[in-house]
Image (cartoon, rainbow, N blue to C red; front, side, top):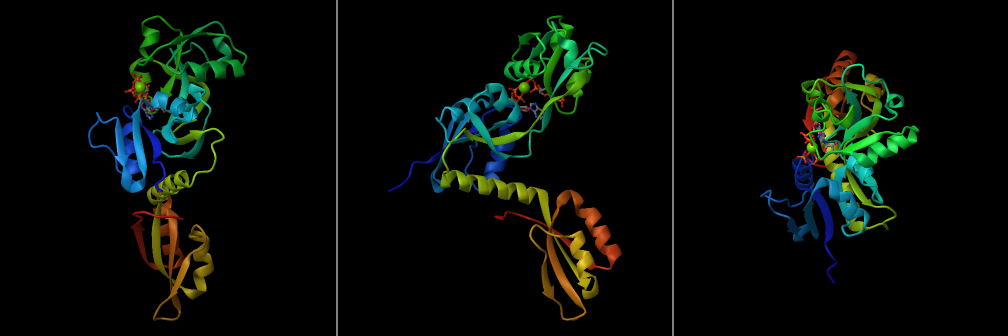
Length: 285
Ligand SMILES: Nc1ncnc2c1ncn2[C@@H]1O[C@H](COP(=O)(O)OP(=O)(O)OP(=O)(O)O)[C@@H](O)[C@H]1O
Ligand SMILES: O=P(O)(O)OC[C@H]1O[C@H](OP(=O)(O)OP(=O)(O)O)[C@H](O)[C@@H]1O
Ligand SMILES: [Mg+2]
C-alpha cells in the first residue's frame, strides 16, 4: 500500500527561499519553477513541498501539520514553536545583534527602560529576560534600522550579515551577539523516528558534504605515507592503491575545500607528486 507523501515546508520568499530550493534540488527533489506555486508534488520521491512564509514554518512543523521544514534558527527561536533543529544547513548565516548610534550603549546591561525596535520580539524578550533587563520592545515588520533615525526607538536588535545596512543607517553594533543563525531543517519536538525523514536528512547531509569537501589524489613514496596520512587523514581513513613503481603508492582522501591549498602545499613539500583535486558531485557517507 502506498504511504502518505512526506510534507516539507520550504520558504516562499526572502533570504532563505532560493538557497533552500537549490539545496533540495541538489538533493534530488523536484522544486517549483515559478515563484507563485504554493504546493509542489514530487511523486517520484513520495514528497510534497509546501511554500510558506519563513516566519510561519516553525509553527506548521511544531503543530505537526507538516513533517519537516527549512527555516532560520533565529525564526525558529523567535516563534517559540515546539520544533527542534535536525540539521543545520550552512546557508543564510547571520548574527542577531544590538545596534545604535555610536556610544548609545555598550551592552545589554545598558538597556534598562530603553526602547528597542526589532522584528524578532520573541527572541529579544527572552534575551532581555535572561539578562534581567526590562525594556520597551517596539515590534516592526522590517526595515528596523530606520527606527532610530525616525525617533521611535533608542536602539535596535536585528539580523546582521555584512553590516552594510547598519552602516548606511549610521548605526554601530554593540555588546555580545544575541545569537548566531543559519538555515536549518526542523521537525516537531519529540517527533517519532520516520524513515522518510531520515532519507531527507541523509540526502541533505550528502549535499553539505559535497559542498564542503573535495577529493585529493596524489602519488607518495612508500616511506612517507604515514606523514602524508597525517596531512590527509580523510573522513575514516585514506584509500591506498599500488602503483607500477613499487616504491610509490597512490593515495585518495577527502579534504575540506577550504583547506585544499594548504594541504596541497604540505603534500608537495613532503615529497608527494601528481596531486589532483576533484569536486564531489554527490555522496552518502
Ligand atoms: N542579509 C542576510 N544575510 C543572511 N541571512 C539573512 C539576511 N537577512 C535575513 N537573513 C535570514 O533570513 C531569515 C529571515 O527570513 P526573511 O524571509 O524574513 O528574510 P528576509 O531576507 O528578511 O526577507 P523579507 O524581508 O523579504 O521578508 C532569517 O533566518 C535571517 O537570519
Ligand atoms: O548586514 P547586511 O548584509 O546589511 O544584512 C542585514 C540586513 O538584511 C536583512 O534585511 P532585508 O533586506 O531582508 O530587509 P528587512 O529589514 O525589511 O527584512 C536584515 O533584516 C538586515 O536589515
Ligand atoms: Mg527581511
